[in-house]
Amino acid sequence: MIHLRRREQGLLTPPGNPGHIRGPADLRGLRTAMRPFGAGTRMLPGQLLAQTGISPGTLSGPEASSHLEVTLSIASGQADAGLGIRAAATTLDLDLVPVTWESPGGYDLSRTGSVEFLS
Image (cartoon, rainbow, N blue to C red; front, side, top):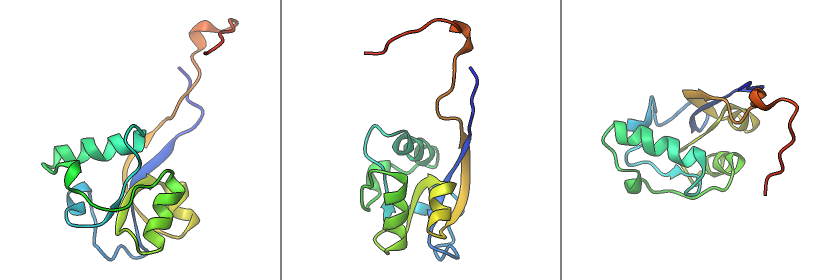
């Protein structure tokens, strides 16, 4: 598998990180913008929160259908934080507390030369 790109995921905060967020455990009690169930970016905070003993169901905040909507929720004051990618944070000058790097998708070279149609 060859990955052609990587992206950094982190906790997005308003400029200056007024909530002093250092990691997922600091989201307790904050309005947290979350992606819809099934989105990869929704599963990651659930796993991270579970590691800190926080049930993801206890978080409140707006649901956002894209990384840009997460940043808009934070920039407009509807949310105190949210998980998203650095590129989205940079778009609206938000701060990012790094959490992980991911390689979404890639190319499987083990089947080079064959064509497969996906249904």
